[in-house]
Picture 1 (cartoon, rainbow, N blue to C red):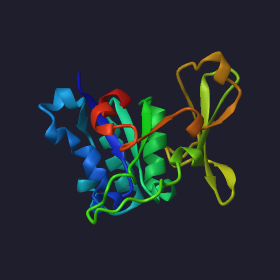
Picture 2: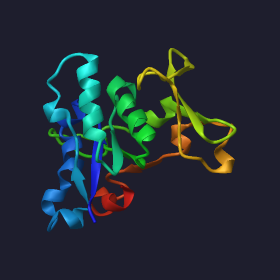
Picture 3: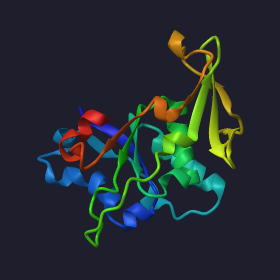
Length: 193
C-alpha cells in the first residue's frame, strides 16, 4: 500500500529542480501503488506570512502522513522550517529518513557535493523512564533546547527501548540517510519510506 509521505526540503532545491526529481518520480511509474507513496508536501501553498501561519500550514501538512522524507541539499541543514518539520514529524511518530539530492543534475545539468546532514544539528534525550523526550538543536556553537513546537522542548512519548533511556542522541544516530543517485532512489524510494 502506498504511504502518504511528507517531504521536507529547502525551496532552493525546488528551483534547482533536484527536489522535483524525487517528488515527481512516480509520474514515470505505472501507478501510485508501484511508486509506493503520495506526496503530502505543502510548500506550493506556502505563500502565507508569519510564523504562526507557517506552523499551522506545516502541522496540517504532516497530519495524516505516515512518514517524512528530508531532501538534503546544500543548505537544508540551516533552514529553520526544515528543522521544525523534522522535529514535528519526530514528535508525531513518523518514521523519518533523509535523501541526499545534490547528486541529481539540476536544470543546468550540474551536480554538487553532498550537503551537511540536518540530523547532525538536531538531538533528543530520553528520560530514564523512557516516557519523556527532550528535543535539542545545535545553534550558536552549542546544544540548546528546541522549543519551537508548542513552546516546550519536552513531551511525553510512547515508552522507548531500554537502551535509549537516559541518553542524548544526535538524530543522525537514529535516522537513515540515502543518496538518490548512488543508492538508486528511483527503484528503492518506496523501501526507504
